[in-house]
Length: 250
Image (cartoon, rainbow, N blue to C red):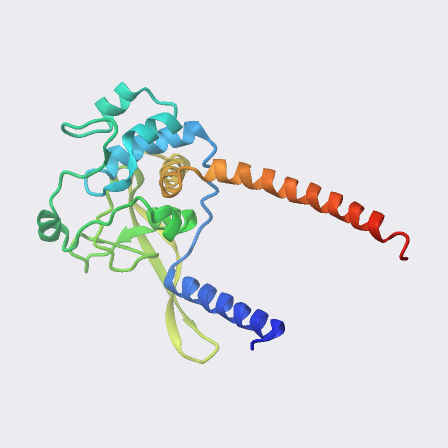
């Protein structure tokens, strides 16, 4: 039988291994998104950004338009007129008109569904990915990404951000081997937004993707606080009862 201390050691090892795997899978420079899924105005702007720039290629098949309208306090007519492309009902899930074979032909891969990206990747990863496109003439689409090297996705926000070049420097590691290390971006062509405006645009978009990954997360957190408060109260009562039962023994 596994003893308690052995079980704890195994759990710690598994936690370290999973953390190392997650860190190893996230290349490039990860920036903090600092998004807030409780900010309705940000979510509304993020929904606008998503449906204008992302929904043409990416679906969100686990989220319904009606849920977005309710949670983001948007009129259903507005959602139907501005978020849905083609015929459909407000109770439909977010789909994409582009066929998989067309996506394969145009991009070399089918764009992934973004319903759960906020949960699987995390908001920091999404924010960093959208902030890390740079010019790369060796790529078919002319751009690459620091966070996801060789990404098949074009820089769809290039008009807003402008084009940037990534600069690298040669450094010598502790093992004595030289390698290239990212040192910063250099603006090549201007975008229609300033750097601060673009960061806010990306943060709002990230916020909406984070929300879509778990629309009930705010309710879950509020319920969790109530449950913890209940358990604390129950512990206090149980401890007081124990003291009353055992006072004559001590």
